[in-house]
Length: 281
Length: 281
Image (tube, rainbow over all chains, first blue to last red; front, side, top):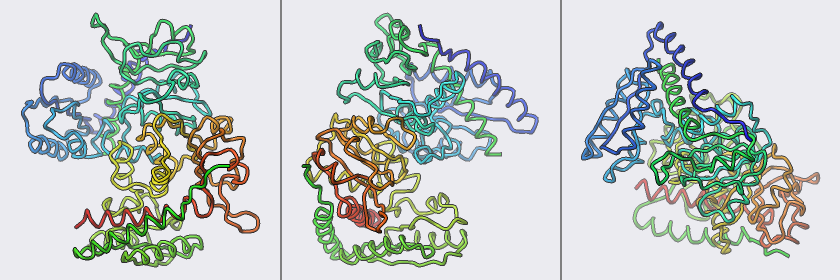
């Protein structure tokens, strides 16, 4: 039976540390601020944004949710972003995705000042990460790296496999593990014999977005398994991409869903907001 | 015995096509121009720059080598770059690397207008490539993709292994092959049991910078082998990273050194200069 990587516990511990740092910064007159732009009424987005807002409040980060109508034009949205680029009260700007179809997502991400892009999605920040000089890092893979650190999981010389090649998880995850000298393979929906490829992994990160997709046939005995999935089963219950019950029997370490990767993502968002505030001072 | 991928022949063919396009553009009043900034007297750099200049002349691209003293300050170099950023006669700016040690290479690459960065090294262009929306692409991996195309080598669903994780070859190569739905592994100097990892490859790209490092023990029978190496042996002869004589016995396709990848790199530089000229008009 694999050891549980307790994301909730680690996140609480890190958030307490960040809170202390914010208190120190306050004394120096630095008040970290985060604005979240929420366009429209997407239900999942509402929940995510609320959770970010609660975490910020708990830590003492000034947080604001700017709600914008579904019908906002691209030009108007860009001008709202520009206003926050100029506003020195906000060190982090987060545009909650997805955006309505009439708005060009790439154009919007490009409009955010890279120094305030606490999500790490701006092409300039992606480029810096890609060349091994990271500035802002996408929060989910960054949080997973913190988990490896906290649980003394060494990546040096290990075979790592990432399932899923998204810009916000798969690709930055691969780059971060490679920076720690892992030999990394990115597998995806077009990979032939995915279970066999996954089974090469000492470290398996699953971000494919299909509930309980990864069974024990995908996992080498003793592998570390990280589950980024957030899916709903037929009863509306939150489940991961990994069939936890059977995979936990063969893994050496495994993250649960919920209380695994999710809390760490929000924590790294807070962490990067505070870092941004320090740099912008 | 594997089929030879004749980089010289393919480069000549592509350069003839680019030359025709340049002639058409001239009629429309567009005169593609490339400036190469060469700092100091590095011998290898002198040769590379001369070869680029000759290729440009042959194709009909206006080309200029701006020779700058080894002692130039960073500030002066940045101001030269800014001058060419503003100069509409030059659509491509190439800063020949390496730079003298007193100059911050990253700062210099950042100073080049991304629209004129025909080498594809600017973090913004790297970022666009990383997120799958390439604008400018590093020329060596781009040239290799053109080879796959010309020789009908399909990447879909194949296992690809890149040996070497440099910013200018290994990492962009991995991303480009992944965009064609290959399952890509990046191996490197810290990979454990490199021959076994390499042997998983249907497509093996070697860019490790060690003469004759890859022997037939690294190669699955029938694999496609691309050799990016440019090394000198004890007699000063140009050799690749791959032991051609024995690997060509097991590979299905293989590039030679010289006359393999090298000519394609220069060709893609010319190609991107012409593309840049079209976009900037």
